[in-house]
Amino acid sequence: MSSITQTARSAKSSFEYTEWKEKLARIGHAAKGAVYGIAGVLTLMAAFNMGGQKAGKTQVIDFLEKQAFGQVLVILMGIGLACYAFYRFVQVAGKSEKLQDKSDLKRTALKAGFFISGIIYLGFAYYAISQVLGSSGSSGSSKGLLSSMMEHSWGIVVIYIASSLLLIKAIYQFVKVANKEYYEGVRGMNVGVEKAKSIVRKAGAVGFIARGILIGITAYFFFQAAQTHDASQVKGTSGAFSFLQQSSSGPWLMAAVALGLIGYAVYMVIVSRYKNFHIK
Image (cartoon, rainbow, N blue to C red; front, side, top):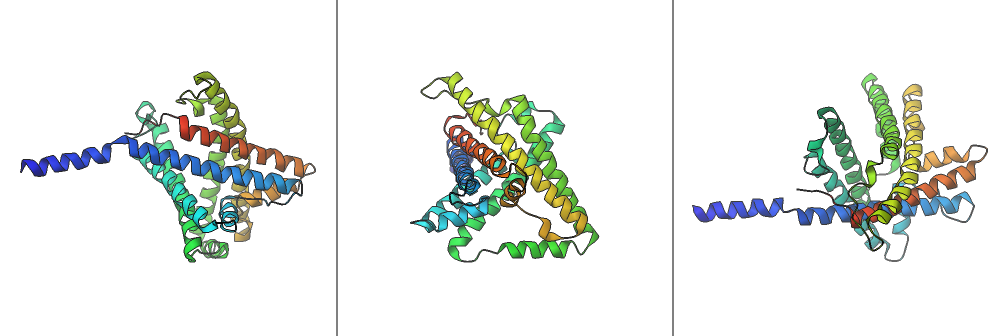
């Protein structure tokens, strides 16, 4: 009986051991940073007609698949994004980021955001891996699902709710820049703690602002879709870049936001290496 108990305790201890969870979190952050970095570079090139394309996450996966050893790169990216999704689900369980220090309302809101983020990145991980396996669904199937939803009043309500949540998320990106909490817990690199925080603070600020702009435009797309009952109005990051490009200073505005995504990539990569994740 004692051996069984000891084995159970050992298994529980192994599961609760934080090092492997932190490693997955670091891999996930690095993968997310790579996605944003590639998207930023491709869009920056497109802004000045130097090749490239207006890219979101799915376009990045498609781009990687066309490179040498593309299928290997896509599989690795899919695994990395799945690791990030895992980290988000760990946050939902309240085992990281010192959530116990937050108010009940803020903790609930943060956990809801973590869960949605986890689902989204798990979906992108599935998309990446299924691209290699040849079983991924097309964007047309997604639009078909949205069109079917919009045939019902509850579907329109869901799209309005999605638009509202996206708007809240967009605003939260700017709040993160204002409250400066996003770079807390970063350990010192070889340049020292304060220099490390300075690098992360600057890269993160332009990154979160860029994300806020793109997410806000996406929220507008969802609102327009609900208003017009037209699923084709729903567009992702590449559509948001096209929206920016239509302005009088389109190429420069698009380039500025693309540079912001590159800054966000730098932020994520540094965080993946030097942040204390507090995972238990």
